[in-house]
Length: 90
Image 1 (cartoon, one colour):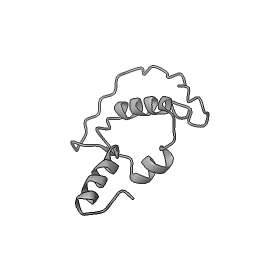
Image 2 (image 1 turned 90 degrees about the vertical axis):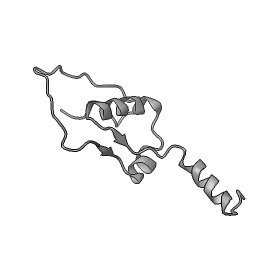
Image 3 (image 1 turned 90 degrees about the horizontal axis):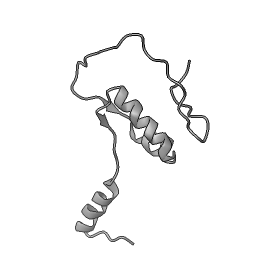
């Protein structure tokens, strides 16, 4: 067995998936499923290619993740706030 995609190679090819014999339905006890943390996002996944993200996003969707950490754009917001308080970009 193993992961459904190969994270050890540089080409990140999808491995063949066996079809399930029956469908599985699970209901969640909470409305949101938070995923990842700052270290995972920044250190581990900061330099993976888009081909990896395509498979990772599929994995999140298949596992019901509906609240992944997304730090995209936060630097812009920090810059706006800091400049309002008189800090410069230099």
